[in-house]
Each structure stands twice: as structure tokens, then as C-alpha cells.
Image (cartoon, rainbow, N blue to C red; front, top):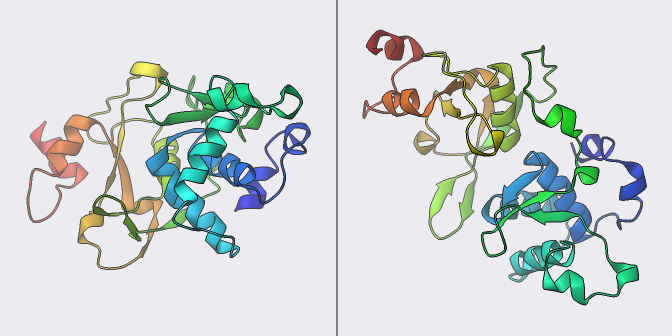
Length: 229
């Protein structure tokens, strides 16, 4: 998985990055998230990546992630304090410092800008990622079931960012599509880690997604939602 991502990133820029470093790991993690993410999305993926090769993960790991990001963001004080010869700008704050939302500069993304807007015209999508592990418990301020962001993105592409119940397809703030990915089997019903496939997911607009969960014992199917519209 990781090697596949790295081959798509410009080698000229990655040559500056020490392989296996926090910075190297975070570049790959942000690419898994589509180039942008919040810290609470980054932490579990970074942990999984590092632990998969038995790299360190201590109680200070999350602080190390935040420091690494800010050390490599041109707008941060950490970056400005560094010797100019050692500065490497990799990240950019999306909504201003303190919001915790960061994105990779284009040269470190695995997908060119012209492709990252998925988007302009519908086109056949060659799916490379068809299933992923979901439902792993993660310790945050509460317990929740983890989702696989790559699988969610693959479903959005397959459904062309279109609600499968009402055909809603619109862009919102930041030129992003307003679309949810609905789990046919709610993650909250899982009792252990589960392999989820694309067929277990479906794109719904926020309204239809809420309708799907209006039944308490189990979600409404797409056909049942259509009958209500």
C-alpha cells in the first residue's frame, strides 16, 4: 500500500525526505486522506503505519505529529525560526492555525491537481482499492468505530459523487461535493473488526442519509428511501 502511494509522489521532492521519518510517514498518511485532514483523522492512520513496521509510538506521538506538521508549514512560527537552509515546506493550514486542518502542498500529493478535482466531467474510474478493515476500536475522548477513508473515497468516485436515492449531485464550500457514504451495515452494530467492500457502501445526500437512519432497528434501503420521496 505505502509503496504504491510513494511512486505517485514527485521523486525530486521526496528525495529530500528521510525515509521512515515522521515527515515521510505523514506525507503518506495525508495522501491516504486525499491530501487534506484533521489531526484526529491523521493520528490513527499514522499509528497503524508506524506500528506495521514496529516503529515507535509513545504517549508523545501525537505531539510529535503536530510539531512535525508545523515545522514544515511556511506560515508557522516553528518554520520561520529554522535555519533557511533546512526549511522544507510540505503542509499548509487550511482554515488558519489552531483549527487543526492541514493539507499537503501540491508537489507532495500523489494525485495531480487536475485529477484531484475528480470531478469536472464524469469519467470511468479505475478502482485500485476494493476492500478495507473497518471497525477497529480507537481511543479518543470516546470510543468509536474507525472508518477506512480510502474505501469511502473509492465509493464516492464509483457513484460519481451522486446520491443513489434522489440523484442529488452538488458542490459546496471549497468546491467539494456534498455527499455522504452510507454503510449498509452500520459500524455501530459491529462487534469486531470487519472487512468492508464497496458493495457494503452507497452514496447518499445528507437528507437521504438521515432518512436511511430514521428507522431504529435497521437502516432503510435505497429502494425504500426512493419510495418515500
